Image 1 (cartoon, rainbow, N blue to C red):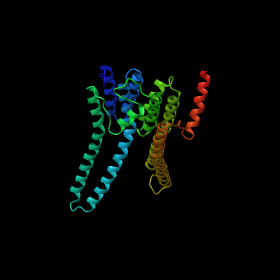
Image 2: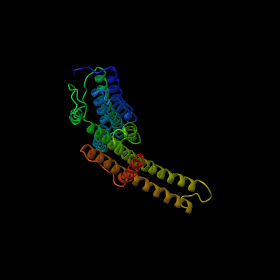
Image 3: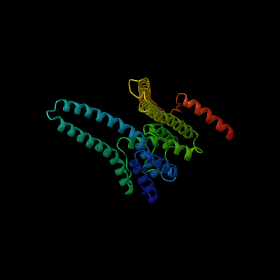
Image 4: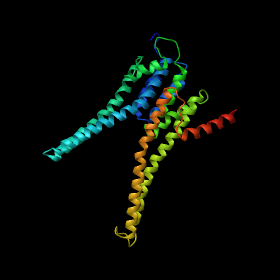
Length: 301
């Protein structure tokens, strides 16, 4: 870099990268840092956007990789237990190995942002593997140039990360919410996409918690119907009715939980489409938000 970053630029870069340690809750910090520094510092803006990408797109890739690794290790563990002579020792070994593997995968996820924070604290132009160089080209970022980042691509990146962050249960809504609050007056595109992503994620989150409520409702009704009164036995009408409600609620709750990954996939697709240049609309949700958005703009005019 021609000029080393100032203390303020380094602080924003370090905080944005370290916020990944909060495991989802810190995703608003890179958006705040980018909003604060976007026309003050190319260095800080790029590092904040890179940190945002790591916590949304990067987290998605890490989750998928973790699931694949755990699936293969689980299959290997079942095979080793089936062929074990000393079952108790083999089970303990498998439990310890899986625990170490899980902590190792979490450590891998945390290692990169910590390295990024240290590098930025020293004034280095850190790049995440693969994503860093691609993002720099996408944003038109050159550490030795005085040109600002490409504004349209900045907005698209932030909007897309708001869609990608759906995989971060509950806390993922902080990304589009923060972008909406801080950038709605400047960019109508970013405002619409952020609102759309927020509404969509809120609906999926409510569906998830709704599945849990339905699941627990069955247990509660079953406990009430089989724990009180003279006809509390399972072979009584009350007991049979309780079992029917219990299994019915379990099936509905599990069905809803199994559908949720499909909504996550649609969120990833929305982020990809936005990055490719589309003004994406979710089915149903997109049209509803567009009507509300148009109405609000007409009232403002």
